[in-house]
Structure formats: structure tokens, C-alpha cells
Image 1 (cartoon, rainbow, N blue to C red):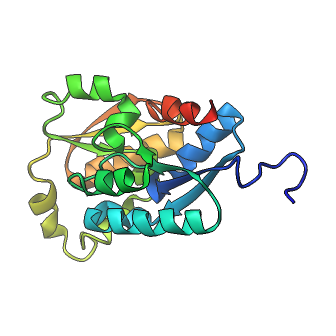
Image 2 (tube, helix red, strand yellow):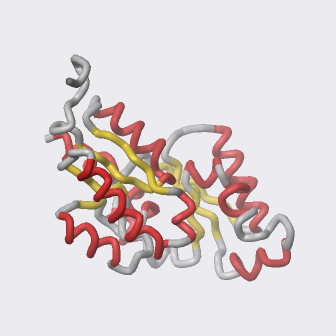
Amino acid sequence: MPVEGTPSTAEIVRIIACGMIAREVLAVREQLGAQHLDLVCLPAIFHHYPDRIAPAMEEAILEARAEGVTHIFAGYADCGTGGALDKVCEKYGVARIAGPHCFSFYQGNEAAALRADEDMRSFYMTDFLARQFEAFLVKPLGLDRHPELRDMYFGNYETMVYLAQTDDPDLDRKAQEAAAFLGLAYERRFTGYGDLVPALAALTK
């Protein structure tokens, strides 16, 4: 039997999310007081390999079902899967976060769509990417060993837009340093958690 005050398996909503938004999902869960939202993360590095997301999601859904969890939510937007994630979600009756990617839903998908032309040559940074810039971008792309690759990867961008989920001076500094490293202008845009809040709030009803 579950410990008193803890949700039962029947009450749990399993959120299978990208590791890039784990901290934010937990923050929103705390904000909502929704302890029945149970977070399981797929590797954040799938951001670089979107073809791995849909198969991993299917496996995680099947694992959740095997545990007796019937309420499942995908903590992803499309995220570069080209509709493959939607096919998996549709197959198992699982909803996901609306939008093309986290950079959109953090801003609010409607607001992001309105700024799409303006941001055409912007490289987006989030709290996660500011925190993990070297480990998640610099080293995987080989920029620490081959700095000459910088312009090949980022030459078409003009500005780094830091979509800040929190007000953290240390992350602001890291994002500015990352922009300088990439040779980009810097803009900070506070977003909070954007559409992630209503997406998770809907799971509490």
C-alpha cells in the first residue's frame, strides 16, 4: 500500500520528459503542489539526436504501463522529430506539450510564432543550456579542440537570445560569456516557464 499522503499508482501521472527541462518540470510541479506528477527523464543529449526521441518515448511508455501507470504525459514538444513523436503519442493515447520545441513553449507558442521572423537568425539559450554550455555544446561539437568550427556551426546566427526561466545573475553571466565565445550579440528575454505551466496544470484537473 502507498504511504499515507503519497499518490497511488492509479493516481500518478507519469511525465516522460526531456532531461533539458527536468528542473523546470519539478519547479512547476512544486508551484502547483502536484505531487502526483511523477517525472521520468529521457537523456538530454537526445536534443542533438532527435531521431532517438520517439523510440525512447515508446519504450518508456511501455515501461510505465508495465508498472501499472495508466496516466502518461510526454514532456516534449515535437523537438525535431518531424512528427515521429506524435505518431508514438497517438498510438498510445498520450498527450504532449504543444509547440515545435521548448524554445517556443517557454516563450509561449503564440508569442514565439509572432517573433519567428525577428528571431530568424537568433540562437536560443535556456537556463539548462547556460548551466551546461561547455558540457552540452562546446565539447560535443568539438569547439574546445577545433575553435575554427565555430563559424561553421554558428556563422548564420547574429544574436544569442537567452530565454531565462529564472532570475539568476550567475546564469546571466554564463549566458553572456557563451554569447561572447560564439561571437554573437546578446539579448536576455525573461520567459519564466511559459506554456509549461498550463500544460502541467491541466494534469491536475
